[in-house]
Length: 392
Image 1: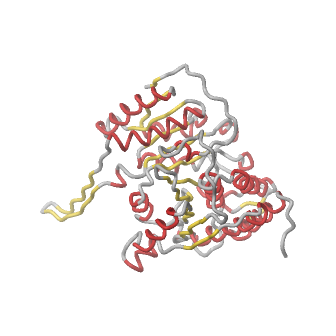
Image 2: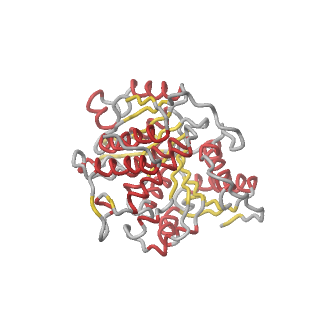
Image 3: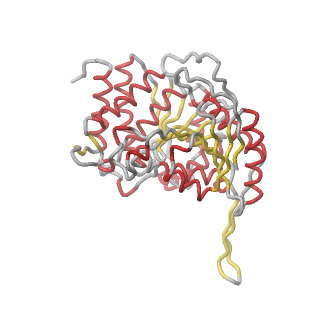
């Protein structure tokens, strides 16, 4: 089902921050003044987290040198499985205090994968209700994935996922009965929760190609799906965008079968999680995926879309690209450093184009690098692209 509009789309005049679509922001407002040393809070995570974070910090050092920038990099506490082993919590109090301190001074969080309930608890604690997942296949990787290049032409979509409602933020229990073990789980959405997420997605669609897909499952969860549809129609109509409603199973299929059909996708928590993982196939590897999680005022936590990959921990095999791209997103969205963000993205693309790859992106004729060596190549390319002499 589709709601159509004939309103003309605005002309693109340059990069627009995704965070400008949040309720507390306005794309027409001028950039804020940053401190001399913007604060980046680091949560290393578990599994491959420390490896990809360290690789990304190596790239950040080159950005500082190339752009004459200085950042304050502050490391926070434990998250995920390491935190559970230490204190029994996925997100300890001292880690939450660390994040709050970073946000209080206008900083941003760069997070490695944490595992378990960590991300869900963090998003709930700081009301990081909106997750942006940009999906733009890199031409340099066109033959590295499982989808033929001709099917990726013109693919440029944005998944806008709810983070603080639905299945992942519900109530659950497990109890013994005379008929055996009984597990239960309940969840809900309020109209206000749905409205603020769809409002962000509609604002983004209005600034892009004017198409908004809202993901539901009418027969499976009828009342919640009806709420998303009702709110979606009203919000789309107000913003003059074309709204279509698609069941999650069909959306997962169409995302692979016809990805160029999508522009902006608004999705409940679980459905958005599924589609973001499916979209990893479009960009050739989950190791390339990244995202930003935001509250209404633009405070952000930036991360990859893949997990901890404990089997790859300490092997120097993990692809750091997604974490590096999450840094670029952080620079653009939280600190409005468009030139620095573009430098990171173009340098990574140049390394790929030169045939340097991690194992997950291998194709005939390319040269395979480990995590650290890949980061070194990107860091070197940052300096080369900015024409800065490399330090011995």
